[in-house]
Amino acid sequence: MANNQNFDTIAIHAGQSFDPTTGAVIPPIYQTSTYVQDGIGNLRGGYEYSRGGNPTRTVLETLLAALEGGKHGLAFASGLAAEDTILRAILKPGDHVVLGNDVYGGTHRLINRVHAAWGVLNTTVEMSDLAAVEAAIRPETKILWVETPSNPLMKISDIAALAEIAHRHGVVAIVDNTFASPALQHPLAFGADVVVHSTTKYLGGHSDVLGGALIINDDELYEKAQFLQFAAGPVSAPLDSWLTVRGIKTLSVRMERHCSNAQAIAEFLDGHPAIERVYYPGLPGHPGHELAKRQMSSFGGMISVAFKGGAAAARLFAESMHLFQLAESLGGVESLVNYPSEMTHASVRGTELEVPDNIVRLSVGIEDVADLIADLESALPRA
Image 1 (cartoon, rainbow, N blue to C red):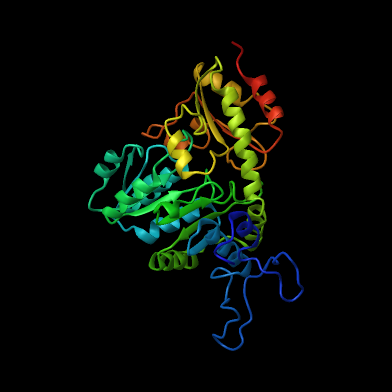
Image 2: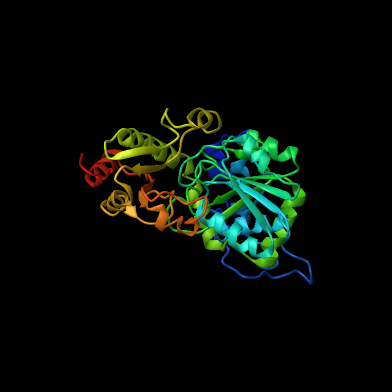
């Protein structure tokens, strides 16, 4: 794949040569657990057992690296499996992680409950306050975990500035790029060391497959993560890899519609008498608007809304729509509505990351925007 090709071309072609046996345009699903060897230890193409490597997963991993402008890609069974792998590749008991005070609840649960049980410490901090971030770094800090835009309050973090702080202290800067996707943002280009994705979301894009990804430039760190992928086995299955590759082919055109629909909906909701605040970086009043313009090519398909009427109004709204279906997850072609405090972020109740109970999160799909706005209007409280 030529390095000078543009994103849309890379998404369709990187790692995806036609099948040499039949000429099939789409690489096949190698639905196999093992591979015949040409003599003991003489492997065909390096494939021995599908936990260690599978040609369909190789296509996806090559594509993931190309999309993010990175050197190495690894594909996993879920986003949390990818996160767990990179945490274990870097951390040991007594080490410390600094992460944002608004991240996906599952990420905080993994770090604060699973890894904490093995002696890993963590501090949450407001990522827009660079002085506070630097002050939170200790001698034992090994990871600065950044999520931008954040989930669910859509905070925008300065990747370049945070990566510079991390590197000054010998800390690995990891960026969760799930909400933006590589169609809109390339954290490695701003100095991040590792990019993590839930490929379940925008990369897969059709709500039909779970997956996760790591994109890493450093050879040594990649080898550690790859070893854990093999030794612990949280790998993306062949069919899951194939579905994710299929989804990625339309990522760019889908993101254009996600973004345009979300912008129109955010502008419609902004200033509505029932709404206290709209969290969307495409609105000029969003505190991260100018930063998002600099490090993203557009503002994404995720919106959160705070209701003046509190939890009761938020819950009623979330349960009253038809096109916006009440479900966890995001990034699919269909629109979803989520009530974070009792759904995706229930695990952070009682912590600094607790989501206000008047917040509703919208994953704006690619349906006709007029129909989506009509659906929202039908569920909004009357003035």
